[in-house]
Image (cartoon, rainbow, N blue to C red):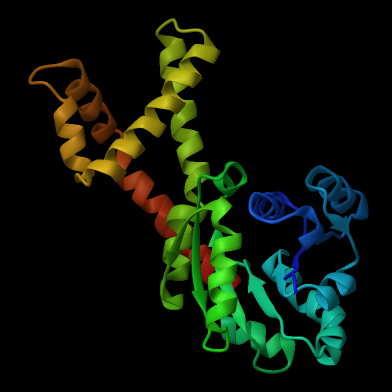
Length: 268
């Protein structure tokens, strides 16, 4: 029997994951619900999927993606718990809510159930994302394997101990915002030096893509890649020192630490 993937919540992240699923699954295997039905309908039409209510998603899907904000999770379970209680077919809850543990998801469900906790990022929408994941002991081997295959269109899946989720999410989940700011800042500098805005942005973005690919494929430490560009007495080392004077590295590390601390607060 075909395993249905149900996405409750068609926001930026839920939509990105639904699009990732559509790279591996036919649209008939995907259902989508959202607080604003028109949004679910538009995404369903794009993917050849079906727009449904939250309850319909909970009753029909094998994998039920809980794509709502952490503070809305309890209200969602008030709505879908009666449906889950009546189900005879097995299901897996997939939570992407920052700061909410697998144990808390089971508590909201009213019993121990299979839970896959994930922390995706927005580049999943173009198949170049990072998805941190952890599965509780009730997720069967076949369900785990099928999930990872079906969602592989999102990008790189990294299994992580649940206690490290807040830290991992601060890097890969929040990171796209920090990276986008860096691209914008690189482009701003180029514009100030006379480049057209579009050209400066293209150069900055592609430089990040290329450098990241070089780092991943070479296995070299980032510091070594930096050193390889810095000629003695050259332009690059001058720019590196300007970044150091501005506290660049401590500012970026501080952003990750602040994001991690906030995520821990959200889970309380």
